[in-house]
Amino acid sequence: MLENKRIVFISDIHLSPEFPERTRKFISFLNSLKGNTAALYILGDLFDFWIGEDHLKLQEHKDAISALNNLSKSGVLIFFIKGNRDFYTDKKLEWQSGMKILGENHSLSLDGTKIFLTHGDTIAIADKLYPTFRRLSRSKICAGIFGLLPAKTKYRLAAKARKTSMDINAGKKHSGIVKNKAAAVFRKGFDVIICGHIHKVSKLKLETNGLMHAVYTLGDWNDTAPYLQYSGGVFRNLKFEI
Image 1: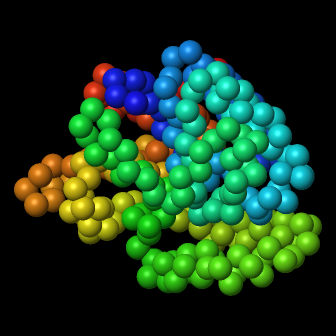
Image 2: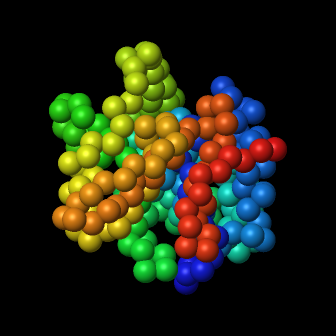
């Protein structure tokens, strides 16, 4: 269905009411895709944080969600991979935005190239404690307890967790792709990995079992608006300019 079509990949937009200009830039970017793009893949952390269905009631992202819906209605397919900041995205968001939520990973074939899509926090983290935290935070028990809390409490806890994470990581450099974790993906038959999370545009070449593979990492939207384009069998890192 997507063979020989223009496909666009983005991640780590981190939409927040604290940064309205970022939201405006994102909406302009979505509008620019109409009529020239077959599909948009958003590889997680679209939002700075997301507390679930209750977040829709807050209306703080209504303009961005409306723009996504309009893009979907124009004929552009929109797919979403859950990130480490918005893994509570659900069916109601899917319905209102027009996005198809794919979960945490997805395989895609383009012109014979097998591609592994993921947010990146499973292959770009060397911290030994993170996998345990990740597993617990996504467990049914944690989700159940969190779901019982009042919306204001959920929002306050999520905002505090986001601030704590930013304070801890301030000044730190992302470690980048953990090569043995990427190699494990390639051994499953994938040719290319596309992910975000490390907030840096890069292309890494890795040899696995005598074959060369590529890892494309997507940049964040804190200052610029980077995206990865696939067209005519070629990947290109580009920047959106208003």
